[in-house]
Image (tube, rainbow, N blue to C red; front, top):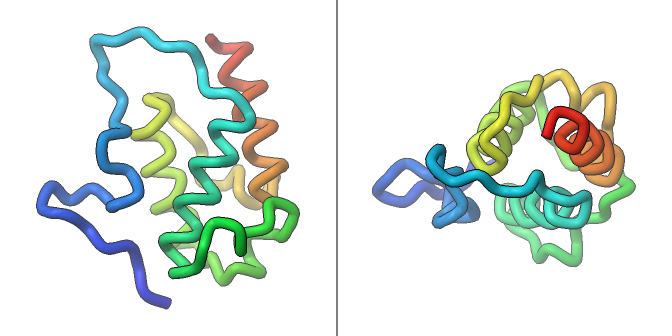
Length: 110
């Protein structure tokens, strides 16, 4: 599987302009925003159109191994500006499940 193309800053193309600014306080992302981010990320990773990424299909059926899971959660951490345990992909094995869990967790920890 080919990995994401990186621009000159080392940031995956899908994440350009989405890095969290530590000086800016922002609302936690919604379920829909997290889900859209993951769909976009997976689409670029898999080199498919976003509408081909189904949110109810388990990550492992997309061929995500542990290395890809760690990469995705690391990039997601950068986007939301919060620590995310990479093992959550095993506890919440679909885009839909993980997005729901993260949105709830971010609201609680606000």
